[in-house]
Image (cartoon, rainbow, N blue to C red; front, top):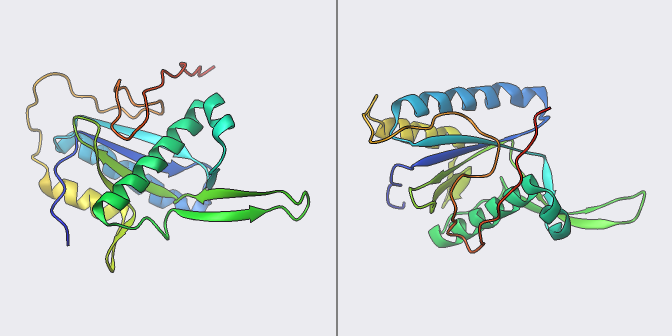
Length: 192
């Protein structure tokens, strides 16, 4: 068992877009729990990211042109680094797979992504925890992390300065990251 994780400044919830309807209640429950944490815990911000079922491992050229893909790839790299540093395992929840097309004969390596995941960051944008993961024989899922954060929460604790509690789907607002990549200014997304 490892040391308890400090209370994060930012919690990111990742949900799979177009997930089967059976995943809907789980995603809704996770969004509700995230809202509860935002109102009771000493978390400065919550963010919601969307990803698909899988992302190509070697899609570097495409990722440079697509900011959301770039963000996902950076997160996955950070998750791997965190898992190695903390002696946790991301598999079987995040899986590398080799996919071949029987029609075109093309093949590629992909990351298979979970339906929901959560990442916690401190005030310096250092990654504190990722779920789901394995710690030895124990599985830690997203709701285990939400429970742990709720247990540490102090209801309506006054904070110095404004508190950001909205859900966003753009890149993190921090100008720096601590997982080996320079910050990239991403273009604003149009909603119309």
